[in-house]
Amino acid sequence: MQANPTVQVRDLWMSFPGKRSGEQVHVLERINFEVRQGEFVCIVGPSGCGKSTLLNIIGGFLRGSRGDVMVEGQPVAGPDPRRIFVFQENGVFPWLTVTENIGFGLLKKSEPERAKIVAHYIEMVGLNGFERAYPRELSGGMKQRVEIARALAANPDIIYMDEPFGALDFITRLKMRADLVRIWQSEKKTILFVTHDIEEAVQLSDRVLVMSKRPATIQTIVSIDLPRPRDLDSAGYLETRDRIFSAMGMSLRIGENEKEALPISAQQPV
Amino acid sequence: MTGKLAWTKIALPLGVAALLLLAWDAAVRVSGSDIFPRPHEVLRGIIQLIEQGLLLKYVVASLFRVTWGFTLAVLIGVPFGLFLGWYGWAFQAFNPMIQMLRPISPIAWIPVAILWFKVTDKAPIFLIFLASVFPIAVSAIAAVQNMQPVYLRAARNFGLTQLQLFRRVILPATLPQIITGIRIALGVAWLVVVAAEMIAVNSGLGYLIIDARNAGKRYDLVVAGMVMIGLIGLVLDLLVRQLEKFDEVRWGYANR
Image 1 (cartoon, rainbow over the protein chains, first blue to last red):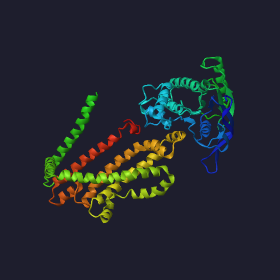
Image 2: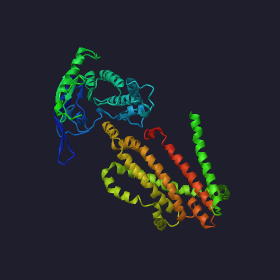
Image 3: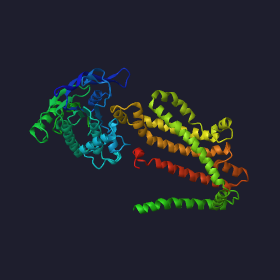
């Protein structure tokens, strides 16, 4: 079972109608990849390249223009409670308490069973003492924890995460990443995680899909076989990170021209 | 610090009220008018109305009409607005008609209301309904249309049925804005009941004002009626504001 692909994307294309009539904006081209069960895969790419679009197609919120997306052997027909999406803009319901939010997907369970599951995940994401708090009383990081707990409580096979830590500050982000890896290790879910932050991808995942600029293709797939917990100073970590940076055509030396940068003579006068 | 703030919160408005009363009194004396009442004469008028039992009777009559017209407007306006906000085709079909009917002042409907309902309570109730149903429906439409898409997407992800989606997401997500619409509508309803009672019926605060003027130029009673209308309007608004303090809707109002 372990090696079976749970998500299969085959020759996926996506284009939107553009601003002018008849015009098509090509967002995704020829996307092919698979995610194995229990794997933690990150999708990185420049802002606006279409990585969120890709995740939304896999999640069933959008439809691709061409190609197949199969999850657990079935073509994706729409959103499904067996695969929960964690949104960048935080989808925690502001009219419900922490407890009610986390139990949102558990309506079919009996009251005591629901309470047990909710208590378990409140503990797991470290929100003890905030059970009856409303989201407006929580920090950004805590709200994101509520959403992750809500996703886990529904016991999905796969969790899709669309830049879930994008709006958090640096320290909170580091902490959230460590917690997410710990939770992933204990819950054994498949996670597909979109980010524009290369460091984040290297810290979290088993494999990184590197996407190009629009129209996005998968430029390269980098396997990260660094042991966990990951040492952010180790040669292996730095080497992997740099490999992805250079795959995206970026220099790590501030002040140096990017590889794709125009020659000085062709640039706009200051 | 907070103690001082609370003190000024009461003292400053009272000061302004006192200044206004003094200015009013001075203006009447300087002009030498023997028709327009001085503040203490208005107070005497209010006391006289209370003693005759008229004030309570008229206040109850006005509130009765507002309660009926307004309740009907909420019962019809909220579901109708939610429906139009959710279904784009319904919005396209009905919105032009709503926008055309909405600017017609309820006062303009008075002759029609009398024609249909004669001089009964139904006429002002109908007018109050007309005045308040539009702000309520329009705020419910906007509330649905402005809903954060992420809430709907999350709800769809959890596999909710249409009914669950409505009860667990759409209704709570739109409630804060609907309550704001209800507050505006109640204010308008209170404005309209007075106008309607001046023409369409023989009781209520509006009737009190027009009757006091027509039967003997009792301007002390006219102003007494005005003061009562203002005070009751204030109390009504304070009551509706309490709705905005519930935990389920407080998120919808910034910095409160």
